[in-house]
Image 1 (tube, rainbow, N blue to C red):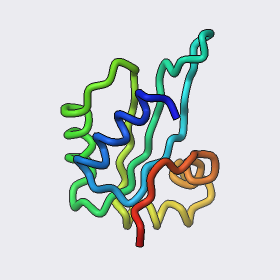
Image 2: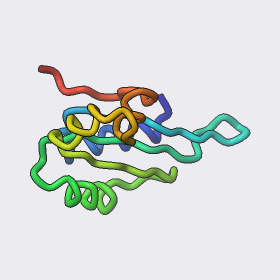
Image 3: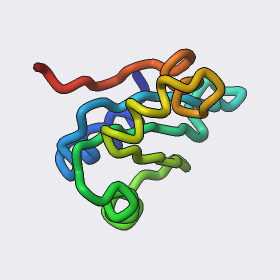
Length: 101
């Protein structure tokens, strides 16, 4: 895993205590270095939008990144819908972190 992705993942885990973090998009330059990436965070937090805002305000990274935060109940509901973006992320993304239990 790229160090920029690792750094952002560590910060998200510190801030959010997520259930799951999934890498669902990663772009690399001609030199092979990550130039941007996208993460999906699934959390039990009551206000996922507020958490998304906190992540953007508090996590600094020299590489461009996007984060999409789902509440646990919404995530589970959307996974059951085959055409949903959540189902696409779950099907094609790579789980970087999953809370034990």
